[in-house]
Image (cartoon, rainbow, N blue to C red; front, side, top):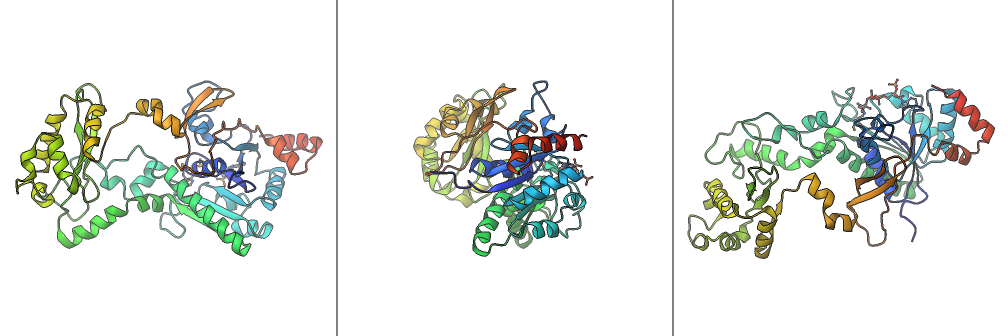
Amino acid sequence: MGKPLEGIKIIDFTHVQAGPACTQMLAWFGADVIKVERPGAGDVTRSQLRHVEDADALYFTMLNSNKRSLTLNTKTEAGKEVLTKLIKESDVLVENFGPGALDRMGFSWEHIHELNPGMIVASVKGFSDGHHYQDLKVYENVAQCAGGAASTTGFWDGPPLVTGAALGDSNTGMHLAIGILTALVQRNQTGEGQRVAVSMQDSVLNLCRVKLRDQQRLDALGYLEEYPQYPHGEFTDVVPRGGNAGGGGQPGWVLKCKGWQSDPNAYIYFTIQGHAWEPICDAIGKPEWKTDPEYTTARARQDKIFDIFSTIEEWLSDKTKYEAVDILRKFDIPCAPVLSMKEIAADESLRKSGSIVEVPHPKLGKYLTVGSPIKFSGLSVEITASPLLGEHTDEVLTGLGYSADQIAEMHAAQAV
Ligand code: COA
């Protein structure tokens, strides 16, 4: 069976993380993704945080697998000519330049649409068109702050916190991928291309939906019953930082397990799901709580939830996080160990499912990367190495009809 996106040609004008994460996913699923990079330098992440001299950094290799690399100086006439030809025969152009860069390069949406009316032009920007911050350049943590995540993350007695998950970057790329696929479906119906725009602020906000829910509940009630501040602490008029509290209707917390004093990740996340209360009492050796009206309802437990967590921690004190989860799973209690990156890298199940993949690379030997989190019954996603800078330049130019002499001239004309 062919790959679902085979035959879709994508001009990948992306850099850093948000755009590359999007095009990498489309490449996994079969699109021909041609990464267009500046001669001599390429995507800045090729050299950022390198751990092997003269080899592409993992930052680059882990976000650009399955692509081809074409070096092109699009500020020269020769480069513009190649880009024009590419646009005429491609389906999608994806970019995450700073605001206005594509226009300044001479490739406005109107011009591209004129060259190829079927083309989809997909962009990531920090803020959406018309936003009062639309001129700003944006990186990950800036977006986490602007999208509402930072103000609601962390502990109440500390500053706003950003998270390690790339809510601003890769998450925005995933939103853009959905937008591109949607536009491709619509193009199948109408034959017309369109612009698809996703802002990093909006993508973060889309994941902070429950915090906007909480703001409205707080406005109405003056308190939020599932937050640690209730009922003993203070609420102001903004959604507070809730530490490790569960965001839904189930109270939860990160609890210490055996060895926490020396192992920074000897913890589990424990959730007190309402209907699991009786199994929890049995699991932790507190059967008397099953019938005690002080404990039988979620409302009754609320004001002593941290005492309950302390009791569970006592029970956990002689169990490793893995032993604890093995016991709790028998009682159908939602929980998981807090896993370090080292543990994730070695996780047999993640390797088996292709969620962690070892990829051979000409300069690095091999590297680990995160494979497709989406599993298909009709597609096995194969991850191949990211391209070296300009690895496919001649191949792409030949495909566009340039002769060997013309390609040599092209290289000379674009010299930086
Ligand atoms: N040939 C010639 N010039 C090229 C080129 C090529 N192949 N590829 C890019 N360029 C030029 C562009 O034309 C632009 O030049 P100009 O500013 O003179 O018009 C420049 O390189 C790119 O500028 P910019 O994208 O603004 O880079 P930057 O390093 O100053 O900013 C970001 C980086 C990420 C902050 C910025 O791109 C941005 O805000 N992007 C949108 C949001 C985003 O995706 N953030 C990053 C998430 S990981």
